Length: 536
Image (cartoon, rainbow, N blue to C red):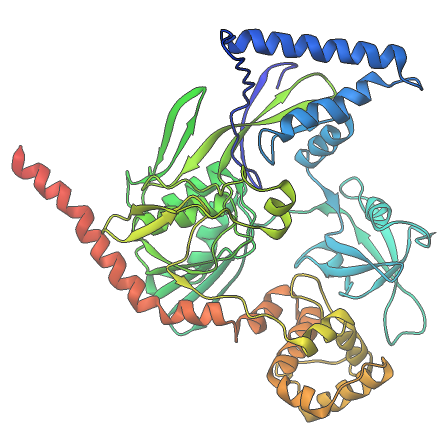
């Protein structure tokens, strides 16, 4: 993108829809001024204020900082929650990310003043070298990590492709540090993982993002599952924050019929743009159920909305994030940039994906996720089912994520277990130090539970036997999941995670209903063609 030219990149991510910025002034009996006059007067007022501040403020003023960090962000903040000004540092980070990342392929986080490995990516250099979740990074290339932030440690791990980095880690059960020599490589940003057969005839694939290769990755996953032989397919978009519009369109194209509308893009300064399935499903007619939750956003919502509106499948879980807009990225200079909301996304039935933000605070919008009490817009799917819009995608079957009870919260808070996306908790590290050899038939039997009681006692965690017995199934599953994560990787661990997942089980239950819905939708789709032929 050239300096001061508008970029053509449309970004679908954790974004929102723009409001119209207007300045109204109506005096009693006075003629209304044109918007252009008001804008010019406002610009002059700003210039006058800046001049007075520069000349009279008690201390010298950094005008560039006042404008870039104050005035411009303040102006954008009244538009919508996501239009954003990039200063030199932020823009440099974005460009660095776009150029690709070279490293060892593991996520790290701060824990008790140290940098701890959350999980090495499957197949990454760190994974192949034998680094485990829970390892404490002590040195990188003989440089101690004491006093370094996690970001600084992560920076030491990155470097040119093909270069070698020496990593020293501490591991529970080992008196001396373990040394690993790892060759840096490009770390692929996979967006599809965990293709598996949940039970005979039922396939499952998890989509964690939408990028340039998502449709190819998904196609490979479906081939691996022999999709033509499946009785049903579950696509898990829970926690998927979105990504590229082109990826959402490409994935939708894999399941919809040729020429079906996927979504439309409408903006004040441009004509409506409509996206249709070009290739069509090419024979992929498996009944489909999609899982979503409150963290499923943007591109995830475009795909889920298209599937729901065309009755191609059923949606299960919790209402999605409600993020539906396009942003145009513009370079303002060599060092700064602007991401400005320029359009809104609509599903095939005409539903607005974006939830309202104008009548609530930014804090409530981002953190408490309060939803204004507005009537939902009602649209119809191809077969006449009612669906609501204006606040994300509402599932056909709402299944809430189970909430942790008091004792479960205690164990997570004391880091006995970590949430599934975080890594391996304390007990798994403790147990693996005692029993370093683990096979895939591992279960948390009475012997393991005996060690679990010992661990709780050593950590000073108070409990009653009733607490253990009342949460026994949950505890056993958590132990098995984290042991598998450490020993066999994320894919095997996730299989354990979904075994008792209420939303996944509901999706399996609804496969026959999804099949009947899709069969009826195909009949509805064929009817206009027959009618058109009769009138010719």
